Image (cartoon, rainbow, N blue to C red):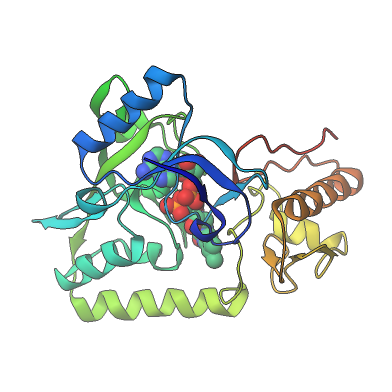
Length: 290
Ligand SMILES: Cc1cc2nc3c(=O)[nH]c(=O)nc-3n(C[C@H](O)[C@H](O)[C@H](O)COP(=O)(O)OP(=O)(O)OC[C@H]3O[C@@H](n4cnc5c(N)ncnc54)[C@H](O)[C@@H]3O)c2cc1C
């Protein structure tokens, strides 16, 4: 168990303070013992994947932060089923699927996360989401290990039934026969589409807000409020896509929160729509009431 580990380097936006406790369990047994250690001491538990959709408080997180490694980040192929550790990156999972000639996971090529983070968020792109390919997930908390079916996970748009302290240790995905060449070509096509519309070469945490149902999309709404390129401190509303915040150099999480609050206030004022944040907060972060 490490103490006071800086989390900024574990997030794609690169902001935030330290974790009070930090551990990298490599097996279910190690994960269980870390969770029980925290439970016995009344310490809260947070999990971080690639930190690609999180914002960490600048003063840090008073919790045990877990980052899955070893067996819990490995990927295996069994027939047409891809078995990924909760900490396995989407890039590695896709690589293994491609090598095995399995298609259906290409949509994840532009989502820079892990199997566990994708399950928690029901991540998706280009008309497909985790829900479409997930069979079940092994979920661990201080009370033990359970396998939850897709239905039990209750996956919907950027939502799952998973709660704080529940760790996705393994995910099984049902894929379909394809060829390595076809998988590679389709993933490359999706990545090119992504590069054309989003700030892929900047430090961001992906989508800031969820797209409200029936709306033109959070990005379009923020853009219509004239906020593209708006900057607070080191944080910038992406000139490329207004539902992204870029770390333009020296940004803090407080800068990001201030920008989010401004975008939310202006969209509410102008369009009467309340934007809900997609990015997950670690530590006592919150947006001011409207
Ligand atoms: C450039 C860019 C593009 C993106 N594009 C997309 C996109 O197209 N579609 C999309 O859906 N998202 C997108 N994202 C957001 C992000 O990549 C996804 O939400 C991703 O699934 C998060 O995975 P992660 O492992 O990085 O999770 P993190 O960001 O580390 O964590 C996200 C949440 O999941 C929880 N979590 C992480 N791992 C686990 C685990 N093992 N068990 C339980 N809970 C866990 C965390 O506690 C947190 O609540 C993008 C992000 C970036 C930076």
